[in-house]
Image (cartoon, rainbow, N blue to C red; front, side, top):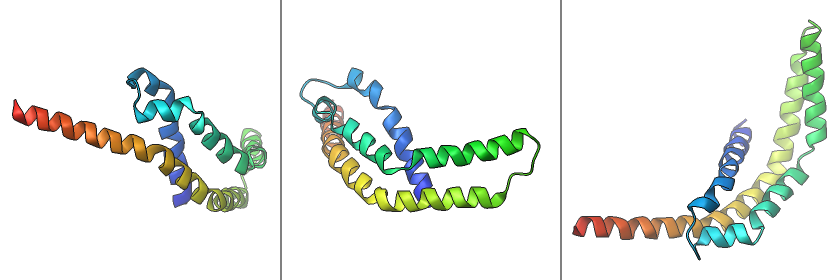
Length: 124
């Protein structure tokens, strides 16, 4: 389930993106990423590769069984896990390349900015 963990961490990281424009300064790499719509295309592409309807239907079946007091079939969860793992295995490399392409310049810029600030702080 390590792919599921990576997927969830990516989703959490992307959830912070709406707050980032308030932190960005003019002409930073982050501005360029957000302005071009590349992040939205990355997330949309990832979601398009996942069969969300099948996953939701499976979770609804298990929730309905639990709500009715019926035993939830562990095989149902196993099947959902295998289905999600298969989809993530197919889409994860593309998502990782896309995320690295978007975040790489931002992280490099942050590293350089931190280096400049540390150098200035050491000089004071």
